[in-house]
Length: 522
Image (tube, rainbow, N blue to C red):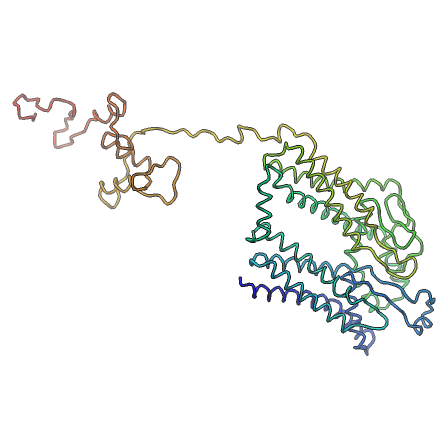
């Protein structure tokens, strides 16, 4: 595909990703404002929607509440200014998935660098336009953060998707050269990078799945507290819908919190608080209904949940062990040790990145610290991945897992030299034409046991032996050795003269001048 067309399509992907993300904030706010307030202030609707979209792309917002609002709401003056940086990751997740698909399409079109650069540049321009048109005195956003952070949310997944597609499909460029260089490594070492990434992806996806299950279980167990917080808010239907939509936008963030809980370190909901399997210590919690799922205390036996990350890592090790067994290099101890360490390191780095994305500030004072701490989460996940993957990767191989020579070597195929002639059915052409065509037929693809003649044509063994049987010769035209069973069969085969001779047969080897008159006839 032409590079200009690839650039235009990638730019269109960036426009769609930004437009859908902004619309996901603008449309609900517009509907709620129309049906809830009756006379919406359109000048405030766009900045509010843009702020939600920016917050969903990791942009921190410095909020400064006006004095009139503080007086009417009874908010103390020391809480008038705070930073809101805990991201509703549903927006970033959508942008990342859409960007990764755009990068893969550009790579399959043969111009992934052009596609990624074009889409990233267009997305950056759109982020700048959103920031320039949505500035207010209440919400202060730094311009470089408003442009750089959402662009990175789009650009990095697009680059990852493009490189992964180029790695698997080829790009006739730098990725292929790197791939060729890795392919020159001996044995399983050439597969080590791909296997390490695969193993870390299995560990992280499995941990997120376990975290999602833990969140659902917490909502089921603590559902009464969640409903009580809804009732305590004295919200009407519009308020319930608005709060529920906001909590849905934060669901990916809460899943990462639950993942950190299962991994062991847990998370904080304010400075000096902790929610972990080893113990829970909470202060005053904001009256957000979803936070009603937080446990008031955690029993000591709940520490067994750390077995789940180890089990997930063991599953990743089992998957990689199967790959190693398929490559035939499963006994390379050094490679298996390196693979286990690489999976642990990559899993720790991925968990640390997720913890960074799911932490931030949700209010003034002590609420400035919420979410999991990246360092402890990375350490815990790394150790659990090392133990779980090592159980399967480094453990001794069973004899059943090793390939056997009998299983790898195919059974010998018995061949018969010079088979007895087989008479074919008479076709539409004459018998001689059928024989010539059968002996010199050129197949579409060479098969086992075929021989080529002087003109490069391949001959079928059975048909060639047929002609040899008629001529008293083998498949390549050599006479059968005298005294061999086939030579005897060929030379002494009786022929039934049929009705023309009165039914009496004769032997071709008998004396032709049987009557003794010297004319050579009987």
